[in-house]
Length: 339
Image 1 (cartoon, rainbow, N blue to C red):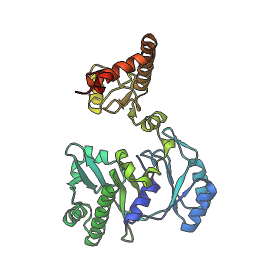
Image 2: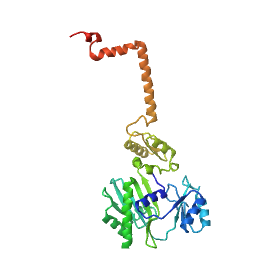
Image 3: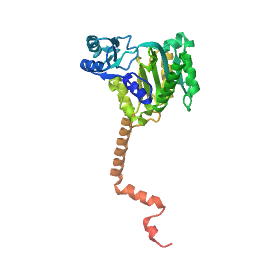
Image 4: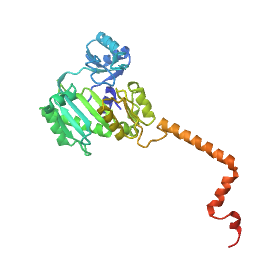
């Protein structure tokens, strides 16, 4: 489950990670009121669950109420990659000296959380990993959490100033704590900035929660934004199914996640494109699978009809009397006789 930036920042703020103040607004008037409390310049940021909002025109720095009124009016209601913007985050503009990247992610190959940091923040970390891998440091994090010495090593990789390193190390340990305590699959700060005044701030935040752990976090489950999700995926989740919509044309209904993945691989291998991933649960639960439920109900009706037919042919007391005599191996009259 993806969280909005303002929701992710609230989690970070609660954990003690320094985050700039901010207000969410759904109208131009609300945006102006928030900016008046912060003072200009401010940043107006579209709150939609996609990356690259800045490149798409969804993030703007404004220096006057007139600019804010124009930009907030433009962003509210705009369509960003198929998602309508219904709210914006208003936050003070920071005087940035340096930008870094910090993120806790799941290394699926090694089945272990990993802290990733890079001195090149504010851009896609995938681009850094692909084109400049020497600029990316990865530190495995086990059940003990992120030790102080590893947090300090990561901070030294990012900044040369000992005072800033101390602040960064503290933030990294708190970030690892959020990742673990909230059952996240991603907890990311991009950029993690050093301001001209020497502050270290999480200027942007992204958190993805493991859906399988939401029953342990009802407060997080309540944050889910259904308007940003595919209606088919919402219905599948309500039925207890694992479903992901893809862009192919061959539908897949498979019993078991492993078999579902193998099926998709085979389709792709033979030149096709799967339209979806769908695991109906492994156990073939009739309650979650409509087709099986209908089949079961039809079978039950047929069994009842056959039973009624037998009762009519043999008389309703016949089968019951036969069962009574067969159970003990002798008749009821024989049981009353003395041995």
